[in-house]
Image 1: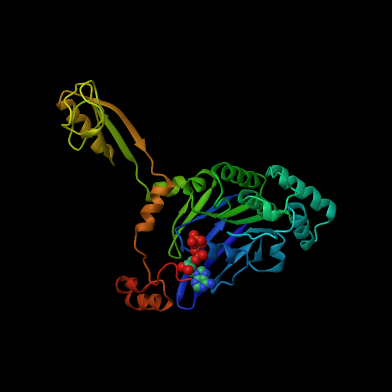
Image 2: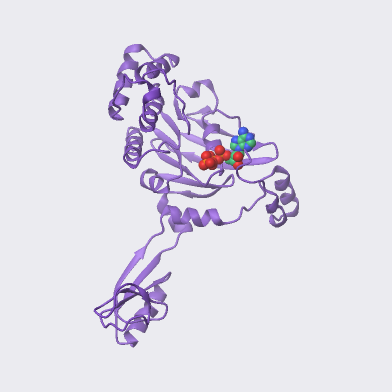
Length: 338
Ligand SMILES: Nc1ncnc2c1ncn2[C@@H]1O[C@H](COP(=O)(O)OP(=O)(O)OP(=O)(O)O)[C@@H](O)[C@H]1O
């Protein structure tokens, strides 16, 4: 449905998106994740045809991004969507339906349906008097007036309370279940993890990880084993204290016989060693739990890694000549150099 091939955007010397390639299937929710300045909005805007790529190409439903025909199949929700404050949701949405030449009766049905599903109340209230969550719902409804096949949502739940956020995310999931293709960016990784089929993680203009969350976890993550023992073993902390003391502390803080101890290790071999050590000390392993890293854990880990390229065009060229990034990394401008 969406094909992106070596898409690149530079602003003068600054490389905002280096060279992104990915595909999005029909009916998929595709997340674009990354820290501030990673290049998410730039990527989404290039897909929506709102900014011209410096190089590479993106096609949506067979149309080049930016092709006027493509716009009829697209719903774009910008990160910030100022609305006409004096209009009501109904007049505002009808206005946009007119821009898309949607017949009045079809538009009315579509608008009512979207607002019902979004549970928007006070449809005759001035937009300027509405809460942030209500306004966001109206902006989402606006992205649907032309019944697009593809939705590009930049931070759809940004700044919303948890209840409204949940609502917006579930609504987005419903849209994908109805066959719409959704590309969305988000900061809150729990949300990405809960609704996206696949994601790309961007950092400093580069895609640093891609796939479904389990795939990313397998490639970039690690599994931790939390092993609880009935006797102290090397590296353990007290986690449950028997009659003699209360509260957690280092081994040796307590002499209670009902105490439990926890060690966190990365491999099954280490788990085996702990079992042997516990048994040798006259105790046993009481419990073993595996802990998968969340997307947030992996994201933080990836985001901490230094860039593998200089974020300036000149720096990239120097790297290509030298085959090294070491000396040029320092030259990258700060993230907020907008
Ligand atoms: N018009 C512009 N001129 C110069 N630099 C720009 C311009 N637009 C974006 N940038 C820079 O490109 C980089 C990527 O910006 P972008 O808005 O895509 O990041 P983002 O991942 O969406 O960040 P955020 O999460 O903060 O919205 C940033 O360093 C930004 O300062």
